[in-house]
Length: 281
Image 1 (cartoon, one colour):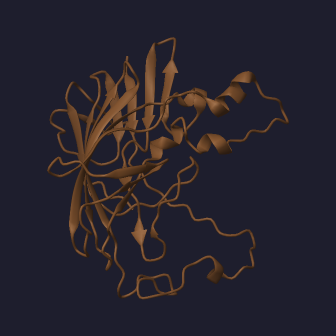
Image 2 (cartoon, rainbow, N blue to C red):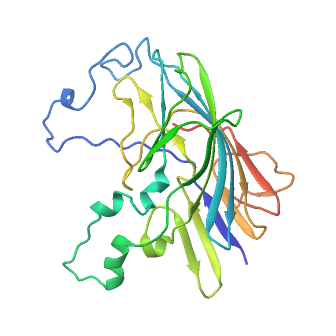
C-alpha cells in the first residue's frame, strides 16, 4: 500500500485591478522611478532582495503533524538599512484566532447542511507552533506574531549588501482538507486506512521588501498568494518508508532513492530526501 505525500514549493503572484475597464493605469501602478521604468522594465537602480533557505521537515503519519526547522539567510540588496524583518506565517490562517474565520461566507440559496455551517467555524487547532526563533549562534531573537505575519527585531540594522541568518523551529497540525477545506492538507481513505497528503505553505518564509510599499506585511486570509524574494532552497524531507513523494527541486541522493520518470515520484525509503537550488520568484 503506497501512501502519498506531496510538497509544493511554488510561489505565484496575483494582481487585482479596479473594475473600471477604462481607468488609467496610473491609478493602479506605482509611479516610474529609478527602480522601475514606465515601460515596466527594471530601472538602472533596480534591486532584488534574496532569501536562502535550509529546511528540514518531517511528517508524522500517525498524528498528521509536520515538524520543521529552518535556517533563513536574508541578503539586503536594497539601498535602505532594515531595522527589522517581516516573515509570513501562512499556516496561521487556520489558527483559532484567525481572521479568515471572521470573513467566511456561504450561499444558502440551495440549502446547507449542519456540517456545511459547522465547517465555517471549526475547532481545528491549526497554525504554526513556534518553538524557537534564534540567530545563527542560537541566541534568542525578539519577535512579534501578528496573525499570519511575524516581525523579527534584529539586534542591529541590516545595511545594504549585508546578510543576516536566523533559525526557526516549529510544528503544526495538518488539516483535513475534505472536512474544513484548504489548498493543502490530508485526505483519509477509510477503506484502506490510508492518508494522502498535499502540503503547501509548510514553512515560515520571508516577505517582500521593495521601494513601492516597503515591507509587504498584509494578512493572508486564504485567497490569492503573495510574491516572494528570490532565493535558493535546500530541503530535506523525511517521511515513513511506505510513502511516495513528489516535489519540485533537484534530487541530490538519487543512488539511495531511485527516481521514476514515469510518474515523477520517488520512493522515500527509510532515509531522507534532499532537494536543492529550487529558485523561487
